[in-house]
Image 1: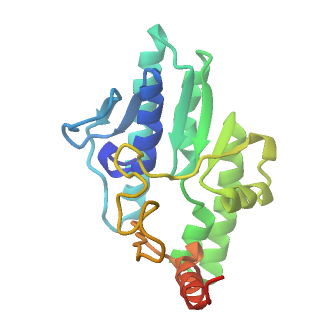
Image 2: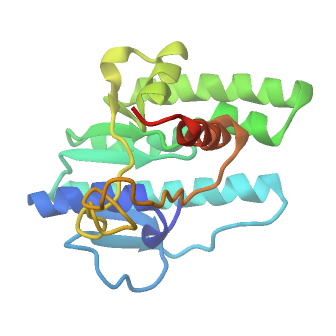
Length: 230
């Protein structure tokens, strides 16, 4: 439920598979022509992304998109079934849109970009937040049950999913990483090839909610900088 150009994780996964020689379709929200997809076939769904305040319309927009995505995937599976269908969250229940493809032998992967219970608690506190988080935890577990594999973005994320009751055998960690065709060691300030003691730059290109502990990372770097060198 996003555009191809605005989801770096989806782009990296799709283009890595395409460069390996796989035929890759990405079903997503339409956003106009994409300049360079590295062989990935973009199938844009022409619906507006709802950004209003109505919860009913918000959920309805999700349902509309996933219904259309499921229909597109099902039609393309009739003559050429997919070996694998990867569903990228949010929400976790989007895995339902991949189930028709299983009728043609496709395996399914649920790529959990972020954990919805914690995100909900970030937005809503008190009794409402706790209740919603518990319901979303159930939704997360059921969605994972429908998938053949579940992707986590790092080891702590994987541990959190195991604690939620998702079998460890289902979980695979695929970290978010920069495209090596664009970002190479030594291209930054200092970098891997810089002189000893040269300054360098760290960049975090995402939001920094408290639950992701970005502040902890900043504090840790400050402490390391104050340590005497060995």
